[in-house]
Length: 209
Image (cartoon, rainbow, N blue to C red; front, side, top):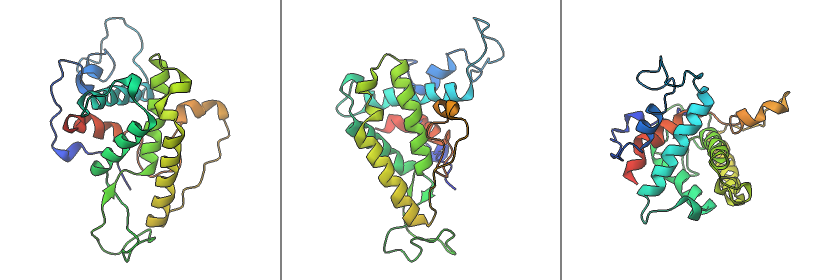
């Protein structure tokens, strides 16, 4: 099962004057800071989902800054979002067999193979859900949200279908009895990757872009 994390990639985040993913979140006074026991405002710490969403947002912004040529959020399109997801594949931990592999479509291969590792569809889907929400919470207009672009939805669907075939693991939509909770659960279903793994990956690797 893919953890979606590349914490062992050995990549040291590029110093960014306190604006990088790790320093930004740590300075936010949340429970994740070094002194998480006390906050200046005394308000309740953000939920795990909100903290994760903030980390994802900050690391994506740093990805744009490190992009060559640098990109502004206003110029970011669905194509750039897809480029970002493909970039993350190099840090994935899910074995995705190619068509010529003897284990193609085998859910439990009896031996290792040379096929590449990628990010699990579930991790990417959850990541896009959080970034889509963060974009609008930070002033972005829903109609111009690059994370909700049709091209991104198509790409995620293709990833889901290709991984299902390659791994022999069908992804079925989960039946949700409480539709009101879908805003928090967006992207959580249908994959084997953890929803927090990808953000740990980006936080450790965006300086390499």
